[in-house]
Image (cartoon, rainbow, N blue to C red; front, top):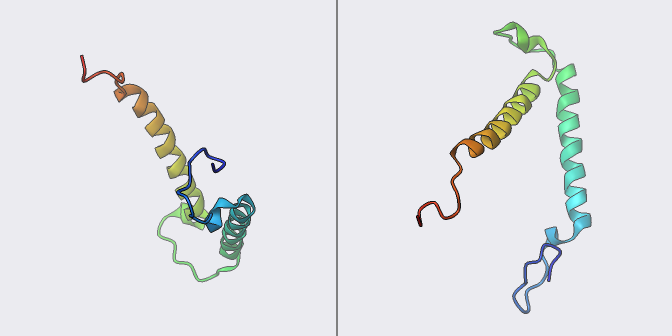
Length: 91
């Protein structure tokens, strides 16, 4: 059995991402790429700003992250509002 409790079909080799060390390496590459893009925003000079908040360094990254957080927490709240019991349609 794999670490998540799923059985692998007989004879199937483990995949590249089944190794936790490879997953950690991939995450570090992602973190470094995000940091590089964030740092590059401070050095990129030719920007055309249409609204004042665009002058903030890394505005679009921060705005996207804030939107993501709102969507996730909004989804959790919406789930509590619209969720039904498991046997809702059986009754």
